[in-house]
Image 1 (cartoon, each protein chain N blue to C red):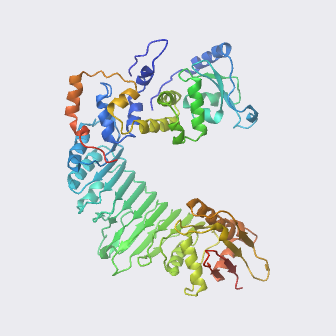
Image 2 (image 1 turned 60 degrees about the horizontal axis):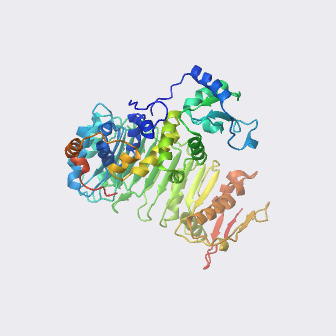
Amino acid sequence: MAERGESSEAVMLKKTEEEKLRKGKMIVGDESKAGYEEEGKKVKLVTSDGVTMEVEISIVKEMEIIQTFIGATDTDDSFIFPISNVSSHILNQIIELVKGEYDQELAKKLSHDELKEILVAANYLNMKTLFHFIATAIANVIQNKSVEFVRDFFGIVNDFTEEEEAELRKTNAWAFEGVDED
Amino acid sequence: MKTTGVSGERKEEDRLSDLSDEVLQHILEFLPTRQAIQTCVISKRWKNLWKGFTTLTFRSFNEIDKYNIYVSQVLSNRDHSISLHKMHLTVFNSTASKVFINAINYASLHDLHKLTLVIDSEVKQIPNSFGSLLLNCKCLTFLDIFDHFSSSSLTLPASFPLPFLKTLHLANVAFTAKGDNNYAEPFSECTSLITLVLKHSIHSHSTQTLCISNHNVSVLRMEKIIFQHTFIPKIVLSVPKLTSITLANIFFHMFYELSCICDLPLLNEVKIDIWIHVDSSINIHYIRVFSNVRTLTLSNRILNRMLTNLYMKIVNMQPSLSVRLESFKSQMDSRIIIYEDKVKMRFERKDAVLTQPLLRVSRSTRPSRCRRCHCSVAATLAEKILGCSLFHSATGFGIALGVIEVAKLVIAPSTEVSGKMCIRDRL
C-alpha cells in the first residue's frame, strides 16, 4: 500500500488545535457504552466536511496513520485528529464495514462512488484490512466487465489516440483473444 | 505520482489518479490476469500497469491452443525486474509440456513464492521430469497441486528439498522409492513444512510404505489413499510436532496400515471422517495410534458402527485412550436424516456409586433435514452425551474413557429413526 498522508506530528497537533476552535461537535455511537473500559474509549476525528466524530478506539486502531498518536496520548481524550481526506459520510460507512466484520454483502450495498471514496480513504488512513476488503469489492464490480466499463468506473480519460489504442490492441492481441471459461 | 489535482474542489478522478500504481495493481490482481491485462488500453498510465503484477492467474479459456501463446506472452512481456510472488497455472493435455516447462522455468528465475498447479482432467501423461522441475523453484512457500481426476498422476521425486515450503497440498500424486526397499520418504527435506495435505495419493508396489517424516509438520490431512489390491500400503509417521491430523474418506476395502514411530506430545486434534462404513477394528487401530489426543472427532457413522459392533460383539475392542482427552465430538453426516424430535438419548451408568442416569436428553423441535440441524444434534451428542459436560466431574476423563473401554455400548435405532443410546459400566 502507498505510504501517504505524511503529516508530521507537529502539523497534526497544530491542526488539531485549530480544528478544535473552529468546529462544532457531533457525537457518533452509543455514549452510554463509554466507560472505564478500553473498549468504550473513543477518539475524536475531524472529517473533511468539518464534522467532529467520536469513533471507538477499536476502529481507530485499524487506522495506522493515527495509531501512532493514540499510543502517545493514551487516556487523554482532548486530542482531535483531522482526517482531511475523508468525509463524515464515508467515515460512517467505514465504521459500518468494520463493525460488520467486513462482510462482502455490505459492500454490495455501496454505490460505485462510495466504493471509490472508501478506497481512497483506506489508502490514506492506511487501514490494511479495509483496503484489502474494498479492493476485493471493487474487483468484484469490474470483473468480467468491458474495458470501457472499467474506464468509466475509475473516471479515466482515454488519452490514447484511436491509432495508438488500435496499435496497442494489435501488439497485445494475445490478451484479447478467446473468451474466459469462467 | 501523478498530481493533477487543483486546489479547492477536487474532482473524484483526480483523487483516484492520486492513488499509486501499487493500489491499482492490487485491485487488478484480484481479476483474472487476462482481463487485468486488457486494462492496458484504458489510458497511457494504465498501459504498463500489468507488467508489474506479482500475481498471475492463468485460468483456462475456451481456446486451449492459444493458451500456451498467451502464457508465454505474459511472461515474456512483464517487467522482469519484478519478482513473481504468486502464480496459478493450468496444465492442459495438448500444451502440457510447453506451458509447464516455460512457466516453471520463468518462475524459478523470479523467486516464485506461491504456486497453484491445476492438472486438467484431459491430461493423459505427465512427464516424470515435471516433479523435479518444480524443485527449481527454491523460494516456494506454498505449493498446491490440484487435480481434476485426470487419468495420469504427477510423480514426485524421491526427495523434495524445498527449504522454505510451509504449505503443501498434493492431489493425485505418486511417489518415488528411496531405495530398493519399497519405501518412499519424500517430505523429510522440506524443513519449514507446517501443513501437508495428501489427497488421492497413489501407492504402487515400489512405494507401498510411505514414510511421512518431518520435524516441523504440524497439520496433516490424508484423504483417499489409492493402491492396487495386491498389497496393503503402510504409512509411517515420524512427525514429532504434529498438532492436528485428519483421516478422511477411508474406504473399507482400501484401508492402510498406519503407525507412528515418534511421540506426539503436541497432538491436539484428531478427526476421523469416513463416508463409508469401515471395519471398526481399523478405526480403533487408528485411534490407538493417536492415543494422547486432546480433541477427538469421529463421524457419527463411525461412532454408530463402533457402538453396533461392540453390541454385536463383532469386535473385541479396547480403545486405549489416555487421560489427555478433553473433548470427544461426533460429526453428523449430512446425508443421514435425523429427526431431532425423535432423538431420545439416554445415558446410564450402573455401578456401585451411581444408580441414576447421568443425563437424559429429550428434545422436541422441528425435523432436522438441514446440515445446521444435524450440527445441533451433533453438538448435543458431543456436549451432553460424550463431551466435557458429562464427564467433567471429579472422576475426570480417565474414568469416562475407562467406561468406554470396559463398557457395553448399545445403540438401537428403531424404524422411526429414533435412537436410544446407553452406556453401561460392566464393573
